[in-house]
Amino acid sequence: MKPLMPLGDALEQLLSDVAVKPSTEELSLNDSLGRVLAGEQRASIDVPPADNSAMDGYALRSSDDGRRLPVRSRVAAGDVAGSLEPDSATRIFTGAEIPSGADAVVMQEDVQVVGDSIDVPTGVSAGQHIRRQGQDCQSGSLLLSPGRRLRPQDMGLLASQGIATVSVFKRLKVALLSTGNELREPGSGPLPSGAIYNSNRPMLSGLLSALGCDVLDLGIVADTADATRDALAEASDKADLILSSGGVSVGEADFVRDAVSALGEIALWRIAIKPGKPFAFGRVGETPFMGVPGNPSSAFVTFLLLARPYICALQGRSEEAPSVVPAKADFAIAKPGTRQEFLRVSTRQTDGEVWVTPYMNQSSGVLSSVSASDALAVVPIGKTIERGQLVQTLRIDALLY
Ligand code: AMP
Ligand code: MG
Image (cartoon, rainbow, N blue to C red; front, side, top):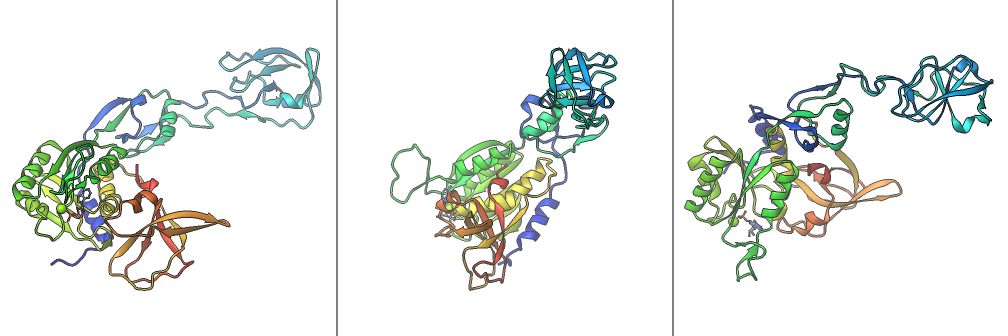
């Protein structure tokens, strides 16, 4: 049997498999949340388009500080600002353009109102409380690079430039197969003996949807060579990527690898991680195939560690991988392991220090461990851990989009 492949090598091989960018479509900016930018976005105007006031107060000449000035005009946000008459001040509100001639804004709290005039304090400096034209974005500057998955704040930034449509990569269509004779769908009635509910299906479907994929759910696939081959063939016809759960281990009822090999190839199988060793990758015809193990925790962890980066690359995403966060181990590992372990842990802060505590049962079949956890703590191959030692952790939330 092949030796286990280190996670880093597996990731490198997966990412080197992604050659072409997906095709693109034009979308209304308002419909573009979570979509991946196909081209760069540059500013075509200055934002703000003109100097404006950062405060409610009075626009004036800074050289008039310490004087009493009549207030001769008024400009609010949206008004056209005229020019400031000599020896006067203009009443001004936040966001209103600065009248020509004025070079400072004094906050209304800092002046004394005397009838129709104000007493200007001393020490007014040129430029104070003025937001300069272009201080947010300058015309021509780069706003967002291709490969960026659009977040609400990115959409706001593009809107500030008057951008109404964006060119994005088309959504990836992913066929999802749940293999296993024992599986029943929730809602199908009480479980007959020997059966369990299909928990991977909504979990994997949710993980795919959260990444912005279109999910083509092909349901439960029976543990036979024919059923597995038929389902894979259908999936490869209809989807850009196939994701299956179960059936990639070494048992007699594990038909997935043979079926993939018969219709294409298995390029990668068995990774030196815990949980998730049986993860497989290959092709069915021309369609990439990923097989996560059936054990729900293994399915979840291998999706985050292996399927997610591959899917991001297929989608044309080009962001940095989510950062690894150090935390103190509220546990000890006395015996070094032969696989890189990803403990399902909960994070807490005590006296400004971040500690991680493993869920009590780390068995790969225990789904409550991932539901109860907010991070994965990494135990490197061949290492022991002492309580209080710093370990690397991955925030689960950061891997869900
Ligand atoms: P397998 O990878 O097919 O050998 O399955 C490993 C374990 O995961 C077995 O205990 C299966 O019953 C369980 N399992 C497989 N698929 C699912 C699924 N979709 N939902 C819940 N458990 C599953
Ligand atoms: Mg099975």
